[in-house]
Image (cartoon, rainbow, N blue to C red; front, side, top):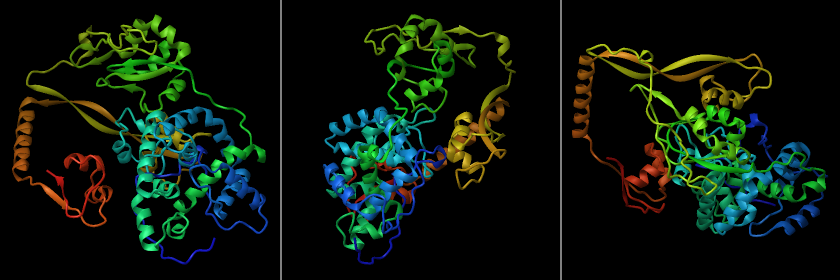
Length: 498
């Protein structure tokens, strides 16, 4: 296809990113697409005919780059293609059911392969996470809860629900699936800007002014759609097909140590993690309320039969008040549909007085956080992901602490690990009182001088642009201004701080 030379645009970062971390060998580093050679291995006529047969609601346009990616996934990344075939039974039933629920083209299921390599816990270099690669703020905007223990971007069902809402919103903006896919990658604002400056109205007429990654994005989708339907014609077959683990559910209220839970229930912890990829720690905190934990069905009868012993061992937690705190729950319903009095925690266990530090009159014990530094020597077969899981930190933190630009590490290399630990500190009551009074005085002073700040919406402004300008999350901005949708208009005054 021939294109009129057009200006190259500067693009803003957006909320949905695409390429998964390469150290996991799931999502390959994709090449810069150039024109295919004069003698491609696969005839152009064959691909054109097959694209036409596969095409449903979303155009599968033949282009030199889609041809290039078909050959790339056949000859250079056959293992990745095979891995995608093997993982289809794990996630495609979820994708198909949710896409149909939202009235979206079922062939959008292939998009997650390009986004994440069907890895539910993958984190991109830009901190996008999960099967559908949501940035943290965008995930929250579409209802995906995140805290230190839970990240619903990693939960396949909820993340797919959020992706469908986002994709439907993008299609409503453009009325064109190729443009909607491009905007999922680079953001609707960047696509609109490319359309304005190039005067193009389709993906292929703005192709030359899009970022290189976005130019490749739609052709990658086309190629992956082709590979999942015709890969066997090119000698690529699944060998170790993965299927969902049959599971039941229990409801968790309050603290639970998941490692102890697995040990007592004879459950493989890695299997529990596969069933609950949105749990990012090995425990859940005291504030946990009615959390639905998936457990392997094969262990569920044993769990019910031995619930008192199992749950008593993993839900007790010593607290400073010389008691073991817990909260019994007899109202939650497990997946068998029975009202089982499942003791998620057991109340009021006494703690030996000798385990508590004596309190000296006139003093108070305060707990504060302290950063502890340690090192890890890289062993054979380790990568940043395996090390981050071992120490329960993020890959991005590991890279930042060790000034790593790339994801590759070498055997014998020493990595810095930083962990926050809590330490007790005895402080005189008088000092605490003075500090408290000073804090109250400062707070009162600030309150007296706090003024609301406003932003007047300019032409071309979006909630995302404004939130980035003032360092806010979109959800915060919408909450401050009681905005339900995403529509704003020039001249509108938005509260930035109050």
